[in-house]
Image 1: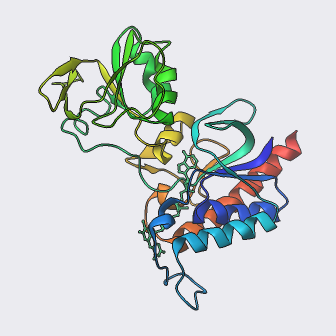
Image 2: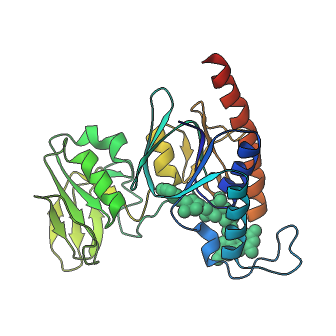
Image 3: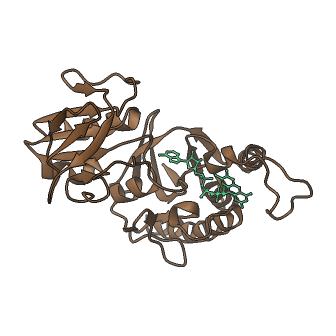
Length: 289
Ligand SMILES: Cc1cc2nc3c(=O)[nH]c(=O)nc-3n(C[C@H](O)[C@H](O)[C@H](O)COP(=O)(O)OP(=O)(O)OC[C@H]3O[C@@H](n4cnc5c(N)ncnc54)[C@H](O)[C@@H]3O)c2cc1C
């Protein structure tokens, strides 16, 4: 069991890890890639830069700094969070347990710009199988995605629904779909329904009747993970207080995933604030056990 598990190895997550490890807390950082900074060629507005450096270099430097301070860094993609005498994190490569968790997963969920999706969100369009599968028991659903995350969402739905179809939206299938699951690779034109989802229409003019469409593009974003843990979100952003605490005790969020000024300096500052709150929380847990 880790004292602190941090999902996200960007500025917010790594900044928090520097503080928690220096406070002697057993700290794990899980990241699936370099996050937003992977695409940043030239950073010159961050404190202490005599010369501009690339986003990748900045992340790599901080990873080395964190490792040197005893932080454990793991490359994995987290699909799911739950709580039972501590937080359980479920990833592609393994499962992890911690007393406190920081969500530092960067911006936004991945969705598709498709007619009907926005209008039918919460009315048959869902971003969280574990949250909503129950509403679709005995019904027909489609999962829109083409990766490990889509398979994970599918595994939550299959025991409950009557049938599930995997829609890759024009991409060739990249994963092994479970036996018996229909895969449709045709591009989508729209998600249809008056009040609730009634089906989808493909660009070739054909259609498919479904009661629900679960969006599971790419990997689980901050909002999806927060929802799974029961945390309150506001649009695409996780709601936190001054101390970066969500409404779930022991669960924190920092960086681009809480919105605001989406900059390295803000993410680093919020990571530090979250670390202070987590240190206090973990010490209370340690005292009471
Ligand atoms: C092209 C570009 C240029 C930019 N230039 C600047 C600049 O010059 N100056 C500046 O201040 N800011 C710049 N920014 C913004 C800055 O990069 C972000 O504000 C900052 O990186 C946010 O940090 P973060 O830690 O919140 O998120 P990110 O840096 O996005 O890190 C998110 C982390 O979460 C991980 N993650 C996400 N989902 C999962 C999951 N399910 N499981 C495991 N890990 C997961 C990712 O792998 C990543 O490690 C730029 C952004 C872009 C895109």
